[in-house]
Amino acid sequence: MYVILAILVVIALYVVFIYNGLVRSRQMAEEAWSGIDVQLKRRADLIPNLIETVKGYAAHEKSTLEEVVALRNKAQAVPSGDVAGRAQAEGLLGQALGRVLALAEAYPDLKANQNFSELQASLETMESEIQMARRYYNGAARDLNVKVESFPSNLVAGQFGFSKREYFEIANEADRAVPTVKF
Image (tube, rainbow, N blue to C red; front, side, top):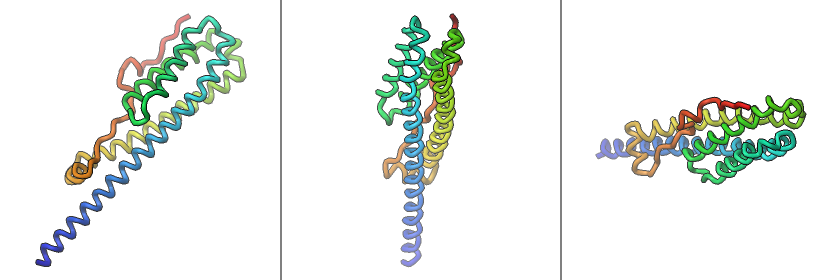
């Protein structure tokens, strides 16, 4: 009788241990996603300043600038929890930003503009921070996914509704390519 009770107590404690590990992993993934969200918002906030600075020098590049604004708005409209949708929208926005930054090569006055240089440096720093946040999120998502899929934690995860997280990655190989700019 005591042996059976002891076994049940050990099993219950093990389930609690696994459950708490799953909760911790889920919270880490949510925190990591929040970090990506903050960095993407900071980048989106830089875009209007960049566009205004470029407009004065490259007025006939209006379609490129309008595309960046449209893609920024599209990226911000993606629901916060839609990791794949956000990754796709941000990938397209990143490509368009690359084209805007490449305009500086065609406009020496723009390239020499201090505001543009500062915005370009801020954007490059932001891209680096987004990459770090993306790696952190994908690591947290991986840890949660391993726990959700591996035995015996998958039994507890299934019972309590834990699910896998999507990775924040560029799905379209064309989005990975460096944009080609020709004048």
